[in-house]
Image 1 (tube, one colour):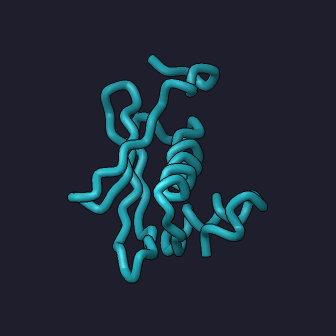
Image 2 (tube, rainbow, N blue to C red):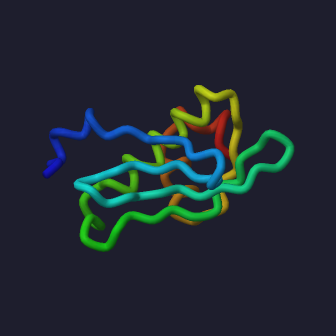
Length: 98
């Protein structure tokens, strides 16, 4: 089981065919879903499996999604309220996430 101190092994995978980013945590899948319009990602939904909620995985998922979409050259608009909250908490994302 991954504990809070062993998160370096968590990886976000971009599933372009499914318009989502996923992260496998203890065999369960957390995800950020998006819609792509004019090379901009509209991040519409985030979900962490019920059994993993309240452990910081949501923030980890969203921040790693931001990192991955940045590496791929995208900018994004946070539609989901949770994704917006994570983006607002860090100056790092202000130029990338609307």
